[in-house]
Image (cartoon, rainbow, N blue to C red; front, top):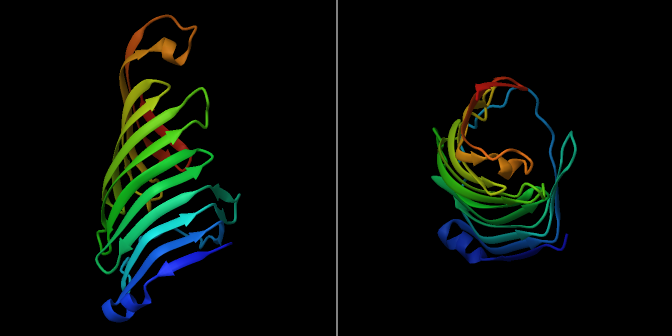
Length: 212
């Protein structure tokens, strides 16, 4: 709804590049349908020509699928990619869960090496505000992440290894914090400081096992 477009058609003719200076819309609705079967990694992510989007801004995005629709608020980003790589600069994404910003660079051919970083801010649970910094690297089929998280003034560190196309995507996860003050979590708890580490892995579609 209310789409605006500012682009440079002469670049497409002279330099074999699609250059969009600005693309915006008040709202966009996408409809997807599940393909069924086991998800498979793509054979290639090459585009037939270079694409550059200086700014894409949406007031709202609604994704409709076989399940409940996904509602996302404002989105602002920039993109550049083509035959060798994809580079996404996410300025802002707002949803009912919080706000996200970050960057991602992904190679267009196997093994689809990737590297990125993100920040997350959430007050979805007013009594448990969350701030996080996330770094990720690896490949599209084997993503490794490291995070620094602050949850209700409690600093934590987390690592995870994710295989998005595997039957059990969460290969491993670890969350640890030092000098955990119990009163930070429960005001009525006795004063005590603990070092806590939680490690686990996925053993079933809805099952995890680990140690504390």
